[in-house]
Length: 176
Image: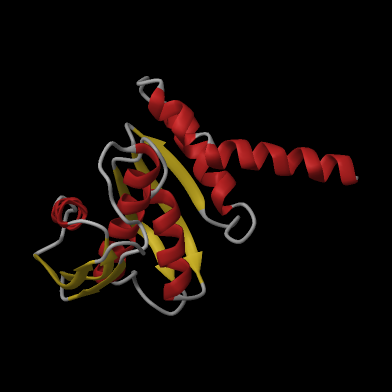
């Protein structure tokens, strides 16, 4: 039993951290690989969520208990290599008709910052604080250069649904 659990753990680790290998190979990532990676990320806490991928668009179906769960799932999905967009039409928070669009935007921004740090060519700080109110994204925290701030703002502006980006609380420091 212990060996079986250890093997499962190694498989999950390979799936979770294998994104850099796929990204560096410059090969398109198949929908099956994307779905498998996301299911592995959700396996422990969110196994009740159905995941399907078509042309890089991930569809989530199911219900979670809290808004924070929805955001956590969205961040994990968005940080997965090959994901182009997320369809949340049938993804719900218990007691609500649909997750709040601001939460979706926040999760996408956080996920894209992480994905860029792990797989991209731009230098970004994935630990920038992100909050969204009425489709305006507020970035705060620290960056080690003006370029790092500009990259975070550009990534944020590229996300569907973002009306404005406020980064006045994002400061350049020597290290973070």
